[in-house]
Image (cartoon, rainbow, N blue to C red; front, top):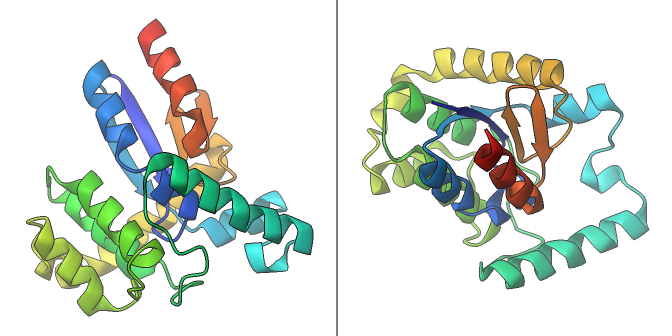
Length: 197
C-alpha cells in the first residue's frame, strides 16, 4: 500500500482549504495517509520564510485575497482574519497525533474540524476545551489529549525534523517516497502521481 506522508498544521488556512480532498483521493487509490502535524514556524525559520505578519504588505494583502478566492472556489466558509490567529497549534496538533496513534478512523475529519474551528467558526484551538469538543464530535476520546500529550508533543517535534529532512517548507505538503507536492492546489499532481504508480 502506498503511503502519503501528510505534513499539515491546524493553523494553516491552506490546509483548511484542502478540505477532505486528500482523504477522498487516498481512498480512490488505496493509499494510506500518515498525518504529520509539524511546527510550521520552525520550518519557516529554517527555510528562510518570514511568518505571514512579517511579510511585505503586498504579499500579506494578496494572501488574504487568495485565501478568500480559494475558499469561495471550494465552497468553504472562511474568515480570512480569524479572531484567534495566530494561535498556538500544539494542543490541536497533539489531538490529531493522539487520534492517529489510537487508530481512530476519523483523523481526517477531526483535523478538518479543528481547522474549521479556527478559520470558519471563530473558536480558539489553543483552548483544550475547544479541542476536546472537536474530538468528542468525531468519536475520539478527549481523554487521549491528557493521556498522550507528552508523547504527542514528542511526535510533533519528530515530524518537524522529518519535514525539514524531506524538503518541506510549507503546509499542506504531501510526500510519497521522494516526491513532494506542496499546496492544496497540487492535489491533482499528487493524484496523477498515484495513478502512475
